[in-house]
Every structure is written in structure tokens, then in C-alpha cells.
Image (cartoon, rainbow, N blue to C red; front, side, top):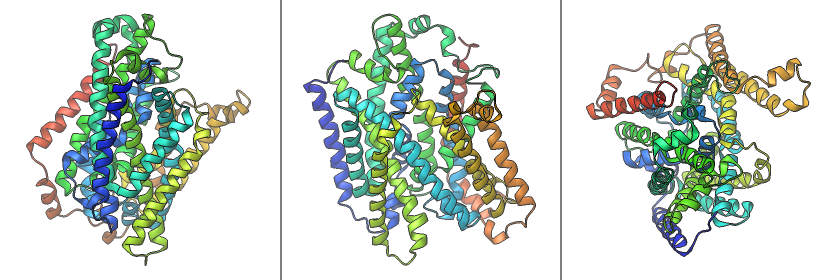
Length: 541
């Protein structure tokens, strides 16, 4: 790999100066209450909301892992990057109910829809899940990127970036996060877009790339008999994970809750859906290009996860290398900033405030900052542990999320669409689901310790996509059966919280919050998703 030269460093320095300038301007603003600190005063426009959604999602695990998928024959996982249609569900379906309820967090929504027990369970599990997946994976991927780009030891790069991100997140709160994320999204798109364009030019165009790696390489749909990526379980499980992540996860939903109103929040989600179409071309295709250049003997790397940084350092000229390096650092920082702020929000408002309801707003903001420091510290503790993860970082992340998401997705979907679901059904689903999910994850980790062919080994060896699909069906069954065996929820508890309980006035208000352009752009997004799914199949290749 080629190292960064003086011009690259100037570009990187200029980027960070702009970033820190924006963060400092935000820090100088008044932030004395929780709504301002955690939700940016609920006064953010659609462009910033959409850019923040995109930047929150795209982290170093995408840069490292998604390009690694492209370089490592894991094209079926592309489906996780075609969830733009699920992002539309956030704005069109879920947001109106969240906004009407006036909640700060997703556990708070469950408390209003069901009871306090559901809120407690989701708060604690979400915090643990964030630290074990999002924080740890992002730090690990960030360490790989930073050490490769700057030529420094892995742990120094990881620690330095985490600490810097933690500082501006703690001081600036949500407003600093969303505005700096807007800048980071622009830099990331420009940098990766330039690399994709120059990569295709270097290999001789799209036709030459297909000729080099083979047309069948781009097929994302494999038969149901495939041991790794059967298409139907892949579609079902990825959709469940997508609904959990885009429509119920605190990190993403918190972005639309910062909007001025439902109209701005919905348009922000539509804009975010448009941006979500780009990772296929920004990260996955460069990974395939890196593979093609390697097959031509013009590039070399040891692990697929090294494909993107090696391609960047060898292909781009001075200055552009610095721009893309800044984009990679932006991806790392925006993901960490999102998780840090959302973790502090969950802890402060769903745990601390419930234990100490008499605390003033200034005290809650201070507690949120302390909570962020704790998350940063726990993330640093995971650095020596996450180096033991498998080479397929992106697949690891989706694997773990397949064991976490089904009970949460089931409870939120039924909570909005089916008013007969009650607190007992939700509680049974959350508790039972988490026990089942973490049990399967534990068995999978310990799989090599079991006798091959035994029942416990067979359970541990169930394909994670197949398990995820059946797991979601089990969670739906638990919620429905337990709810029907116990009294229906009180009408007052359901007012405005489900599709069957909103008033005509609320329907009219929701209808006035969108226009024909919003509908048209949403339809275009869905058409593009379907087109990509067809394009990446043997039918079109």
C-alpha cells in the first residue's frame, strides 16, 4: 500500500478543521434541557435528517465489510443494502405514531403502548446489544481502516478515533452529531464515488469487470438448497432485521424524531432512502473491482476486508487519497457518534430518569454526558476481544442482529398494526425471544465444543438465516397466543397508538403532511430497489 503524502494530509486536516468548527459552533449554543441535548430541540430540517440517517448507518463496517463481501464472493448479503424501501416504512408508517406519542426513545414508546416492564427490558437489552455489536464492530473496523491508512498500530488508531468522537459527542449532544454527520455524509459519498469511477476506468469498464470475475459472480439469489445463503430465508430474515434496524432502533429513529414536524421527518426518511441506494455502488462494487484487479495481477491483498483501503491507496492520486481517507474516518466517527449519543439517551431517559424522576433537566444532560463516557470506555475495553472475530465482519454483524431483532420487530409491528396485543403478550415475546436468541448465539459460539452429529451440535449448526426466519414466526406466535389468552388492553391505552385507534382528525393531519412529490419519489425508490434486485441475478446477467 502507498502511504499518505503531504497533500493527502492537508486535505484530511482541512476536513477535520471544518468538522471541529461546526462542532464548536454547536457547543456554544444553549443546551440546558433534554429535548435540546438529545433531540436537537426537535427543530431539524429534512435534508439534515436524511443525511444524518445515512451517515448513522454507513460506518467503517460498511467500508471494510461490504467491500469485503464484494471481494469475497458474498454477493447475497447485498440484500441488506437494498433496505431503502424499509426506510420509507419508517417515514410513512411508523413516524406518525412515534410523533403523536411525543416520545424521546423507543423503549418509552413501548411503555406508552404496553407497560413499564417492556420499556425496562428493551432499554437494557438495547444497551447491551449496542456495546456488543455496533460499538465493538465499528471500533474494530475503524482500527483496521485507520491503521492501514496512517501506518500506525491498530489499537492506537482505534483509541484515538474513539476518544475524539466521544469528546465532541459528549460536549455537543445530538445537534453536534446531526450537523457533523451531514458534512461526513457529503465527504463520504464524494470520496467513495470518485474511487468507484476511477476503479471502473482502471479495469476497463463494467463489461470488462463482469468478464474478469465472471457473470455468475454477481448473482445475489441462490437456491433454497444453498447451505450458506438460501434465498427465501435470506429475504425473510433480512427484512425482519431491516424493520428492527430502520423502524424501531434508537440510533435511526432518533434522527427522524429531531425533525420540526412529521412532514420534515417523513421527507428526511425519503431522502435517507434515496441515499441508502448508494452503498451498493460506493462500497460493494469497489470490492468487486479490487477482486478483478487482483485476478488481473495488478493488485494484491491478503484478506477481502483489506480490499477497499488497498484499492484506494494504490489507485487514487495524491489529494484524492486524502479525500477518501477523510471519508473513511468520517464513516467511523459518524457511526460511533450516533451510537454514543443514542446509548446515552437510552440510559438517561429510560433508566436514570425512571430511577430519579425528581432530577432537573440540567442534571439529566450531565448524566447523559457521563453515560457517553462510560459507553466510550466499554467500547475501548472490547478492542482486545473483538480482534478474535471472524474475517467476514459484515456477515458477523448481520448474524448477531438476526438473533436480536425478531422479538423487537414482532412487538413493534404487532403493537402498531394489531390493537389486541397486550402488555403480557409483549412481555412474553421480549423475554422469551431474548432467551431463545441469546441461547442460539451461545450455542453457535461454542459449536466446536460439541460432538458432531449430536442434537445440541445440530441446533448450533442451524443456518442463521433459516433460524432467523423461524425465530420471527415463533415470536409472532408467542405475542398473539399470550395476548388472546389474557384480557384486551384498555381503550385509553390504545388511543392514537395503533392503526385501529386514530381519530379522523389525526388521519386528516397525517394526510396533510405529504404531497404528490413525496409519493412520487417514494415510488421511484421502490422501483430502483426492484431493478437492482433483478439486475443482480442470473436472469439479467
